[in-house]
Image (cartoon, rainbow, N blue to C red; front, side, top):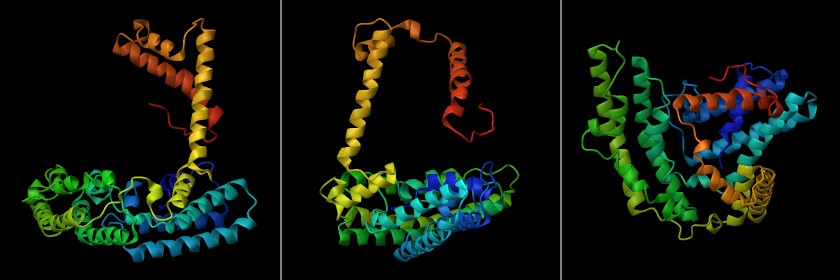
Length: 362
Protein backbone atom coordinates (compact mmCIF):
# COMPACT_ATOMS: atom_id res chain seq x y z
CA UNK A 1 0.00 0.00 0.00
CA UNK A 2 1.59 3.25 -1.11
CA UNK A 3 1.42 6.64 0.56
CA UNK A 4 -1.18 8.69 -1.27
CA UNK A 5 0.80 11.37 -3.17
CA UNK A 6 -2.20 13.57 -3.92
CA UNK A 7 -2.81 14.22 -0.22
CA UNK A 8 0.86 14.89 0.38
CA UNK A 9 0.96 17.40 -2.47
CA UNK A 10 -2.07 19.24 -1.10
CA UNK A 11 -0.68 19.30 2.40
CA UNK A 12 2.98 19.99 1.82
CA UNK A 13 3.61 21.63 -1.54
CA UNK A 14 2.40 24.99 -0.30
CA UNK A 15 4.22 24.53 2.99
CA UNK A 16 7.60 24.06 1.37
CA UNK A 17 6.98 27.14 -0.74
CA UNK A 18 5.69 29.30 2.09
CA UNK A 19 2.22 29.26 0.59
CA UNK A 20 -0.59 31.61 1.58
CA UNK A 21 -2.56 30.45 4.59
CA UNK A 22 0.07 27.88 5.61
CA UNK A 23 1.72 29.54 8.62
CA UNK A 24 2.98 26.60 10.63
CA UNK A 25 5.02 26.49 13.79
CA UNK A 26 8.75 25.94 13.19
CA UNK A 27 8.70 22.36 14.53
CA UNK A 28 5.75 21.36 12.34
CA UNK A 29 7.25 23.10 9.33
CA UNK A 30 10.53 21.25 9.83
CA UNK A 31 8.79 17.89 10.11
CA UNK A 32 6.72 18.52 7.00
CA UNK A 33 9.77 19.65 5.07
CA UNK A 34 11.76 16.61 6.21
CA UNK A 35 8.99 14.26 5.15
CA UNK A 36 8.55 15.98 1.79
CA UNK A 37 12.26 15.94 1.02
CA UNK A 38 12.48 12.28 1.98
CA UNK A 39 9.57 11.45 -0.33
CA UNK A 40 11.26 13.21 -3.22
CA UNK A 41 14.60 11.50 -2.66
CA UNK A 42 13.13 8.08 -1.95
CA UNK A 43 10.82 8.06 -4.99
CA UNK A 44 12.60 10.00 -7.75
CA UNK A 45 9.90 9.23 -10.33
CA UNK A 46 7.35 10.88 -8.03
CA UNK A 47 9.74 13.82 -7.66
CA UNK A 48 9.85 14.21 -11.43
CA UNK A 49 6.06 14.07 -11.57
CA UNK A 50 5.64 16.95 -9.09
CA UNK A 51 8.28 19.07 -10.84
CA UNK A 52 11.37 18.48 -8.68
CA UNK A 53 14.14 17.46 -11.06
CA UNK A 54 17.16 16.98 -8.78
CA UNK A 55 16.73 13.18 -8.98
CA UNK A 56 15.90 12.84 -12.68
CA UNK A 57 18.90 10.58 -13.24
CA UNK A 58 17.35 7.82 -11.11
CA UNK A 59 14.47 5.37 -11.15
CA UNK A 60 12.57 4.24 -8.08
CA UNK A 61 14.28 1.57 -6.00
CA UNK A 62 11.82 -1.35 -6.02
CA UNK A 63 13.97 -3.80 -4.10
CA UNK A 64 12.62 -5.56 -1.01
CA UNK A 65 15.33 -3.85 1.00
CA UNK A 66 14.06 -0.47 -0.19
CA UNK A 67 10.50 -1.30 0.85
CA UNK A 68 11.70 -2.40 4.28
CA UNK A 69 13.69 0.82 4.60
CA UNK A 70 10.58 2.81 3.67
CA UNK A 71 8.60 1.06 6.37
CA UNK A 72 11.27 1.85 8.96
CA UNK A 73 11.43 5.46 7.83
CA UNK A 74 7.65 5.81 8.03
CA UNK A 75 7.74 4.46 11.59
CA UNK A 76 10.42 7.06 12.35
CA UNK A 77 8.26 9.88 11.00
CA UNK A 78 5.25 8.54 12.89
CA UNK A 79 7.27 8.68 16.10
CA UNK A 80 8.09 12.32 15.43
CA UNK A 81 4.43 13.10 14.76
CA UNK A 82 3.28 11.38 17.94
CA UNK A 83 5.92 13.21 19.98
CA UNK A 84 5.02 16.60 18.53
CA UNK A 85 1.23 16.37 18.22
CA UNK A 86 0.31 16.64 21.96
CA UNK A 87 2.21 19.93 22.24
CA UNK A 88 0.35 21.70 19.43
CA UNK A 89 -2.30 24.36 19.96
CA UNK A 90 -2.70 26.07 16.57
CA UNK A 91 -5.41 24.73 14.25
CA UNK A 92 -3.15 24.61 11.16
CA UNK A 93 -0.52 22.62 13.03
CA UNK A 94 -3.04 20.15 14.44
CA UNK A 95 -4.75 19.56 11.09
CA UNK A 96 -1.48 19.02 9.24
CA UNK A 97 -0.24 16.54 11.82
CA UNK A 98 -3.53 14.64 11.64
CA UNK A 99 -3.25 14.40 7.85
CA UNK A 100 0.38 13.34 7.97
CA UNK A 101 -0.35 10.79 10.68
CA UNK A 102 -3.14 9.32 8.55
CA UNK A 103 -0.77 8.97 5.60
CA UNK A 104 1.87 7.26 7.71
CA UNK A 105 -0.49 4.85 9.46
CA UNK A 106 -2.14 3.96 6.16
CA UNK A 107 1.23 2.89 4.78
CA UNK A 108 2.06 0.91 7.90
CA UNK A 109 -1.31 -0.84 8.05
CA UNK A 110 -1.19 -1.70 4.36
CA UNK A 111 2.39 -2.94 4.30
CA UNK A 112 1.49 -6.38 5.69
CA UNK A 113 -0.50 -7.20 2.53
CA UNK A 114 2.60 -6.82 0.31
CA UNK A 115 0.69 -5.23 -2.57
CA UNK A 116 4.03 -4.08 -3.96
CA UNK A 117 4.43 -7.67 -5.17
CA UNK A 118 1.86 -6.68 -7.82
CA UNK A 119 4.57 -4.68 -9.57
CA UNK A 120 2.88 -4.26 -12.95
CA UNK A 121 -0.38 -4.82 -14.78
CA UNK A 122 -2.17 -3.65 -17.91
CA UNK A 123 -2.50 -0.07 -16.63
CA UNK A 124 0.72 0.55 -14.74
CA UNK A 125 4.29 -0.63 -14.57
CA UNK A 126 7.54 0.14 -16.32
CA UNK A 127 6.12 -0.89 -19.72
CA UNK A 128 3.41 1.79 -19.37
CA UNK A 129 5.04 4.42 -17.17
CA UNK A 130 8.56 4.74 -18.57
CA UNK A 131 7.71 6.55 -21.81
CA UNK A 132 4.25 7.95 -21.16
CA UNK A 133 5.03 9.33 -17.72
CA UNK A 134 8.50 9.15 -16.21
CA UNK A 135 10.52 10.27 -19.25
CA UNK A 136 7.80 12.56 -20.59
CA UNK A 137 7.79 14.55 -17.35
CA UNK A 138 11.49 15.36 -17.70
CA UNK A 139 12.63 18.68 -19.19
CA UNK A 140 14.75 18.37 -22.33
CA UNK A 141 16.20 21.82 -22.91
CA UNK A 142 19.95 21.44 -22.49
CA UNK A 143 22.57 18.83 -23.30
CA UNK A 144 22.77 18.13 -19.58
CA UNK A 145 19.03 17.31 -19.57
CA UNK A 146 19.58 14.66 -22.24
CA UNK A 147 22.53 13.22 -20.35
CA UNK A 148 20.34 13.01 -17.27
CA UNK A 149 17.74 11.06 -19.22
CA UNK A 150 20.43 8.71 -20.50
CA UNK A 151 21.57 8.12 -16.92
CA UNK A 152 17.99 7.27 -15.92
CA UNK A 153 17.73 4.82 -18.82
CA UNK A 154 20.89 3.08 -17.66
CA UNK A 155 19.00 2.24 -14.46
CA UNK A 156 16.33 0.28 -16.35
CA UNK A 157 18.03 -3.15 -16.02
CA UNK A 158 18.31 -2.76 -12.25
CA UNK A 159 14.65 -1.83 -11.89
CA UNK A 160 13.56 -4.66 -14.19
CA UNK A 161 15.50 -7.13 -12.05
CA UNK A 162 13.74 -5.74 -8.97
CA UNK A 163 10.34 -6.04 -10.67
CA UNK A 164 10.98 -9.69 -11.51
CA UNK A 165 12.05 -10.33 -7.92
CA UNK A 166 8.84 -8.75 -6.62
CA UNK A 167 6.67 -10.70 -9.05
CA UNK A 168 8.48 -13.93 -8.13
CA UNK A 169 8.01 -13.25 -4.42
CA UNK A 170 4.34 -12.67 -5.14
CA UNK A 171 4.04 -16.02 -6.89
CA UNK A 172 5.60 -17.76 -3.87
CA UNK A 173 3.25 -15.91 -1.50
CA UNK A 174 0.17 -16.35 -3.73
CA UNK A 175 -0.06 -12.58 -4.13
CA UNK A 176 -0.50 -12.25 -7.88
CA UNK A 177 -2.66 -10.40 -10.38
CA UNK A 178 -5.58 -11.99 -12.16
CA UNK A 179 -5.13 -12.87 -15.83
CA UNK A 180 -7.47 -10.06 -16.88
CA UNK A 181 -5.10 -7.58 -15.26
CA UNK A 182 -2.07 -9.02 -17.06
CA UNK A 183 -3.29 -10.10 -20.50
CA UNK A 184 -2.03 -6.96 -22.27
CA UNK A 185 1.35 -6.80 -20.55
CA UNK A 186 3.25 -9.09 -22.99
CA UNK A 187 2.20 -7.03 -26.01
CA UNK A 188 3.01 -3.81 -24.14
CA UNK A 189 6.50 -5.12 -23.43
CA UNK A 190 6.91 -6.20 -27.06
CA UNK A 191 6.82 -2.55 -28.12
CA UNK A 192 10.31 -2.26 -26.62
CA UNK A 193 11.64 -5.46 -28.27
CA UNK A 194 12.97 -3.86 -31.43
CA UNK A 195 15.73 -4.85 -33.80
CA UNK A 196 17.45 -1.47 -33.96
CA UNK A 197 17.45 1.24 -31.27
CA UNK A 198 16.00 3.75 -33.74
CA UNK A 199 12.80 1.69 -33.73
CA UNK A 200 12.42 1.99 -29.95
CA UNK A 201 9.57 4.19 -28.72
CA UNK A 202 12.13 5.78 -26.42
CA UNK A 203 14.39 6.83 -29.28
CA UNK A 204 11.51 7.97 -31.48
CA UNK A 205 9.98 10.19 -28.83
CA UNK A 206 13.02 11.62 -27.09
CA UNK A 207 16.07 11.34 -29.36
CA UNK A 208 14.86 12.09 -32.87
CA UNK A 209 14.33 15.84 -32.50
CA UNK A 210 16.35 18.40 -30.54
CA UNK A 211 16.28 22.09 -29.59
CA UNK A 212 17.32 24.39 -32.41
CA UNK A 213 20.35 25.69 -30.52
CA UNK A 214 22.02 22.25 -30.33
CA UNK A 215 25.07 21.86 -32.54
CA UNK A 216 25.40 18.90 -34.93
CA UNK A 217 28.12 17.52 -32.65
CA UNK A 218 25.75 17.74 -29.66
CA UNK A 219 23.05 15.85 -31.50
CA UNK A 220 25.41 13.20 -32.82
CA UNK A 221 26.89 12.55 -29.39
CA UNK A 222 23.51 12.29 -27.69
CA UNK A 223 22.09 10.02 -30.37
CA UNK A 224 25.11 7.74 -30.26
CA UNK A 225 24.77 7.44 -26.49
CA UNK A 226 21.03 6.85 -26.77
CA UNK A 227 21.51 4.05 -29.30
CA UNK A 228 24.09 2.44 -27.04
CA UNK A 229 22.01 2.55 -23.86
CA UNK A 230 18.87 1.35 -25.63
CA UNK A 231 20.74 -1.53 -27.31
CA UNK A 232 22.86 -2.54 -24.34
CA UNK A 233 20.53 -1.84 -21.42
CA UNK A 234 16.90 -1.20 -22.29
CA UNK A 235 16.17 -3.86 -24.92
CA UNK A 236 17.82 -6.75 -23.03
CA UNK A 237 16.02 -5.75 -19.83
CA UNK A 238 12.63 -5.72 -21.52
CA UNK A 239 13.43 -9.04 -23.21
CA UNK A 240 14.07 -10.55 -19.78
CA UNK A 241 10.89 -9.10 -18.31
CA UNK A 242 8.84 -10.23 -21.32
CA UNK A 243 10.16 -13.76 -20.99
CA UNK A 244 9.37 -13.87 -17.29
CA UNK A 245 5.83 -12.51 -17.63
CA UNK A 246 5.04 -14.71 -20.62
CA UNK A 247 6.59 -17.97 -19.44
CA UNK A 248 6.90 -17.96 -15.66
CA UNK A 249 4.49 -15.59 -13.97
CA UNK A 250 1.42 -17.33 -12.58
CA UNK A 251 -1.81 -15.32 -12.34
CA UNK A 252 -4.41 -16.04 -9.67
CA UNK A 253 -7.52 -17.99 -10.72
CA UNK A 254 -10.11 -15.92 -8.82
CA UNK A 255 -10.60 -12.31 -9.87
CA UNK A 256 -11.89 -11.18 -6.46
CA UNK A 257 -9.39 -9.23 -4.34
CA UNK A 258 -10.68 -11.24 -1.39
CA UNK A 259 -9.11 -14.36 -2.93
CA UNK A 260 -5.67 -13.03 -2.00
CA UNK A 261 -4.16 -14.06 1.35
CA UNK A 262 -6.04 -12.31 4.15
CA UNK A 263 -8.22 -10.91 1.39
CA UNK A 264 -11.15 -9.71 3.50
CA UNK A 265 -8.87 -7.60 5.67
CA UNK A 266 -7.09 -6.38 2.55
CA UNK A 267 -10.41 -5.31 1.03
CA UNK A 268 -11.23 -3.38 4.19
CA UNK A 269 -7.83 -1.70 4.07
CA UNK A 270 -8.32 -0.73 0.43
CA UNK A 271 -11.67 0.85 1.31
CA UNK A 272 -10.01 2.80 4.11
CA UNK A 273 -7.20 3.86 1.74
CA UNK A 274 -9.51 5.14 -0.98
CA UNK A 275 -12.55 6.31 1.00
CA UNK A 276 -11.05 7.11 4.40
CA UNK A 277 -13.81 5.05 6.00
CA UNK A 278 -13.85 1.93 8.13
CA UNK A 279 -16.91 0.34 6.50
CA UNK A 280 -17.66 -3.00 4.91
CA UNK A 281 -18.02 -3.32 1.12
CA UNK A 282 -21.75 -3.89 1.63
CA UNK A 283 -22.06 -0.70 3.65
CA UNK A 284 -20.21 1.29 0.99
CA UNK A 285 -22.45 -0.18 -1.72
CA UNK A 286 -25.57 0.69 0.27
CA UNK A 287 -24.37 4.29 0.60
CA UNK A 288 -24.26 4.39 -3.20
CA UNK A 289 -27.74 2.89 -3.54
CA UNK A 290 -29.13 5.36 -0.99
CA UNK A 291 -27.52 8.32 -2.72
CA UNK A 292 -28.85 7.30 -6.13
CA UNK A 293 -32.34 6.94 -4.68
CA UNK A 294 -32.09 10.34 -2.97
CA UNK A 295 -30.94 12.09 -6.14
CA UNK A 296 -33.57 10.38 -8.29
CA UNK A 297 -36.29 11.48 -5.85
CA UNK A 298 -35.10 15.09 -6.03
CA UNK A 299 -34.99 14.91 -9.82
CA UNK A 300 -38.53 13.57 -9.89
CA UNK A 301 -39.73 16.46 -7.69
CA UNK A 302 -38.21 18.94 -10.13
CA UNK A 303 -39.94 17.25 -13.06
CA UNK A 304 -43.32 17.59 -11.29
CA UNK A 305 -42.57 21.21 -10.30
CA UNK A 306 -41.95 22.00 -13.97
CA UNK A 307 -45.44 20.72 -14.75
CA UNK A 308 -44.56 17.41 -16.38
CA UNK A 309 -46.34 14.23 -15.30
CA UNK A 310 -43.66 11.81 -16.44
CA UNK A 311 -40.70 9.85 -15.13
CA UNK A 312 -37.23 11.38 -14.88
CA UNK A 313 -36.05 9.07 -17.66
CA UNK A 314 -38.80 10.22 -20.02
CA UNK A 315 -38.08 13.82 -19.05
CA UNK A 316 -34.38 13.33 -19.82
CA UNK A 317 -35.22 11.81 -23.20
CA UNK A 318 -37.48 14.76 -23.97
CA UNK A 319 -34.73 17.24 -23.17
CA UNK A 320 -32.17 15.36 -25.23
CA UNK A 321 -34.47 15.30 -28.26
CA UNK A 322 -35.50 18.98 -28.09
CA UNK A 323 -33.44 21.12 -30.53
CA UNK A 324 -34.09 24.16 -28.34
CA UNK A 325 -31.68 22.74 -25.77
CA UNK A 326 -28.71 22.73 -28.15
CA UNK A 327 -26.43 25.57 -29.25
CA UNK A 328 -26.41 26.28 -32.96
CA UNK A 329 -23.10 28.15 -33.26
CA UNK A 330 -19.64 27.88 -31.73
CA UNK A 331 -19.88 31.42 -30.36
CA UNK A 332 -23.15 30.66 -28.58
CA UNK A 333 -21.57 27.55 -27.06
CA UNK A 334 -18.57 29.52 -25.79
CA UNK A 335 -20.80 32.28 -24.41
CA UNK A 336 -22.86 29.67 -22.59
CA UNK A 337 -19.70 28.15 -21.17
CA UNK A 338 -18.42 31.55 -20.03
CA UNK A 339 -21.73 32.30 -18.36
CA UNK A 340 -21.60 29.09 -16.33
CA UNK A 341 -17.95 29.63 -15.34
CA UNK A 342 -18.16 33.29 -14.36
CA UNK A 343 -21.78 33.73 -13.29
CA UNK A 344 -22.61 30.36 -11.75
CA UNK A 345 -19.48 28.49 -10.72
CA UNK A 346 -17.17 31.31 -9.60
CA UNK A 347 -19.67 32.97 -7.20
CA UNK A 348 -20.36 29.56 -5.62
CA UNK A 349 -16.71 28.69 -4.93
CA UNK A 350 -16.42 30.70 -1.65
CA UNK A 351 -19.43 28.82 -0.33
CA UNK A 352 -17.50 25.55 -0.56
CA UNK A 353 -13.79 26.39 -0.29
CA UNK A 354 -11.92 28.58 2.20
CA UNK A 355 -8.56 29.08 0.48
CA UNK A 356 -9.22 30.14 -3.10
CA UNK A 357 -6.39 30.51 -5.69
CA UNK A 358 -5.85 34.10 -6.75
CA UNK A 359 -5.15 33.18 -10.40
CA UNK A 360 -7.86 34.24 -12.80
CA UNK A 361 -9.84 31.49 -14.51
CA UNK A 362 -8.84 31.51 -18.18
